[in-house]
Image (cartoon, rainbow, N blue to C red; front, side):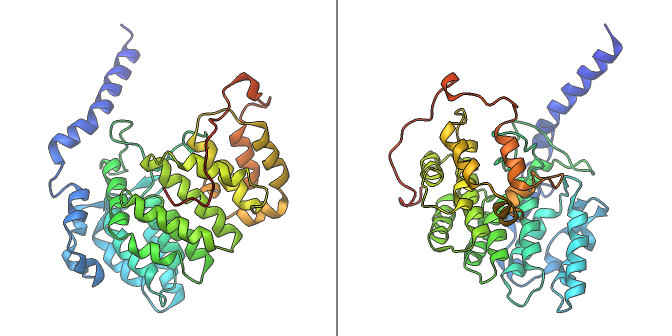
Length: 353
């Protein structure tokens, strides 16, 4: 037997067994960050009682999480420069080069409360950090993956730079958002459109309270008048629906992109959402929508929509990248070669699913 092949087989078998080993050894213990976050009294988060949180038990990219409370307190500083610099340091530590440190979920409830404080400075950045911690670094280069929040333990095992089972880290962060969903839900009505975008992005990653979150996103969408926020709300609705298997979401997004009375950013966002929710070939009328709606003006409006921003790694333009994602084959496929989407009744203003 080839030694190289044998070594690879042993390595692959070990990697496959790691999640099972972790579950057997640590699940439900004080080393399971999901258990720690779930068991923390809410008054700890509300009162910023840092000394009741076991920071040192968990880690980030640069070692022990014991320094995280100091960074969090500086993020709350009345000095803009101090607050923003500290948030950047916190981000670089707990969300580093695609790795989410095991201490990160313990930060999420505090960041949500910082974002809810109108006197705090880096409110948008705090929400985006929450949203990033609650998402794995999935390969977002296909319709199947673009709206994926995280892999399940059964799909792939991910480990951070310190060897901690990162699937648990992401799961704990998502649970923390769900537990405090009322905070970002309230921020959907914040006067700052950047806060509204970031709140929608964070809510789409929550592990639970799906019906409540979906209703809140729909309610805001009905009255939203800002282009970038509208597009973000559509994608948040689609992502939450994908995670929680809301079958009516495909009907909702199709009704939006096929409605010529809708704004361009809504139709393009809905087209992306629909394509990520179904496996159907790209229909010609959807391509026509993109041809009509995708303009330089729209590209500028949607450049900071977070779902598209994660795809636009080379700065080529988010809507350009969007079209590349929808049609990776240079020769467009004909819908005659595949199955058209199912005919479905419903309209985009139906009650939230």
